Length: 377
View 1 (cartoon, rainbow, N blue to C red):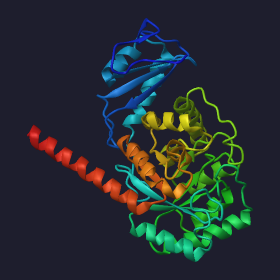
View 2 (view 1 turned 120 degrees about the vertical axis):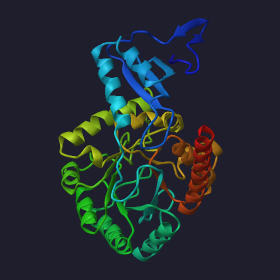
View 3 (view 1 turned 45 degrees about the vertical axis):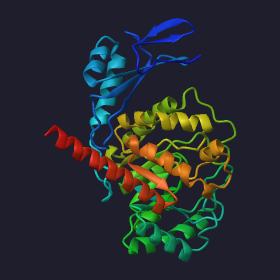
View 4 (view 1 turned 90 degrees about the horizontal axis):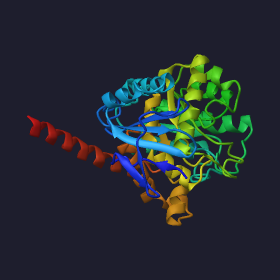
């Protein structure tokens, strides 16, 4: 049985036993911090949630502030103190603009798959002309950048040949760049990354987090472009066979800490890194919901967050909707949750609708901010 500390109380009753947040925890415990006040570039340190994972069966949670957390950490072993210090430093690290794309607000990344078999838009853009036209339309509708992919990564899919992938994406990238559009290349291959960058792509997006191709991490370092590292359990061929986690968001956080460190050791700069927990990639419904519920913990890694919830199968599972293109309402709901949690980049298929939803949230938040300032003055 996993015990979750009631974040609104000082104690919690489980099977008749009163449980209090522990004054001391095991030296082997893992600690996470989830900010409550979200505004992208400066997370409030006065409203935090301290989460302690003592072992596989006990997770304690408590709302607090940075001073109280440091006070609590001072009574713990050095390992716990170091984790707290690292997480707070990650929250305080400024997210700089990336290739002209601001990280102090939510940005939209339009999904443009030049494939015959992607889960949602496969076959929509079977030739370069169709894809280029669609990318330009996405930009008109409010996309901040376009993510061009030549490989379907739906469950059970297989990689196309290198030549086919290059032929699919390069003409599209060249034309979109010529049209003044910021382009990202969605690929697991180092050679595709190189050729796409030479054609003008300014972002890299790798669902394998630079692990599928042993040359990718070196190429990413040499190119010096922003790179989205995504978490995936397994690979597209087998990722949905039987994904397992002890506690998905925390398992993935721990994995990212190691992966980020590997990138830094290999010459990739912290300011290049963007992290994506990989909704739907090697995850069941419960795992996706757990990750989205605790998406805020990833901010303490010190990198901008990218999340793709658009048309994903977990939306269909909840609503019994098998047609991906009919999942727009669920996609917008999940997207707006991510916005409320400070996610900086959202991968979306329905750019126009997503931009409209974002504009409403932005207008409401701006009004609330102005009203609050006027009231305080």
